[in-house]
Length: 162
Image 1 (cartoon, rainbow, N blue to C red):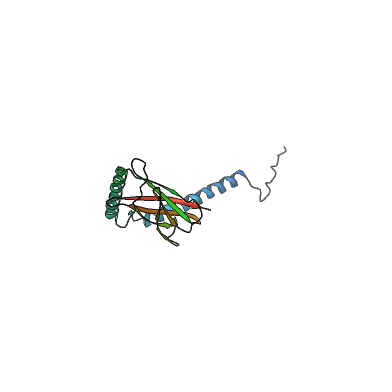
Image 2 (spheres, helix red, strand yellow; image 1 turned 120 degrees about the vertical axis):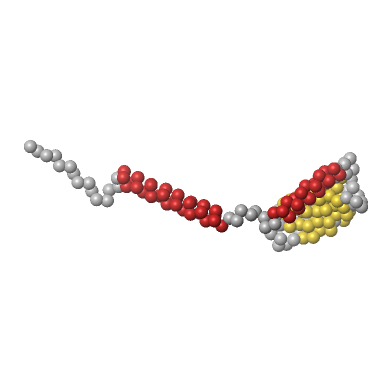
């Protein structure tokens, strides 16, 4: 009787069990790290989004009321940078007529930082247009306030200059 000998498996050969064990270990490591981050985030979050939520809510309500009042006025503003270093705001009333007797002030701020903040003093140049000099290089957020004897209107827009 002859017995067929099975050839010995060579050492160091990767088998299906090795691949399965490696994949299970890999995903177990990923799940463990994700679980650690979730636990750390949950334990460190106080649940409070604002340090003074009541006051922030009141301020937001005032902002909403201000926006409603401005919408009722019917004023409109268009902002333009006709040439380098100049910002022009054109104000019109509810009927689309230019508003020439306003006082307009504003600031330019970078979107991500307060470094380089610029204060703008607009001067009337006719036809409801108000002009101010500014350094415009890159992205800036314009926040301006137009006032007449009894009302005010806020203008907010982003300016991007090459």
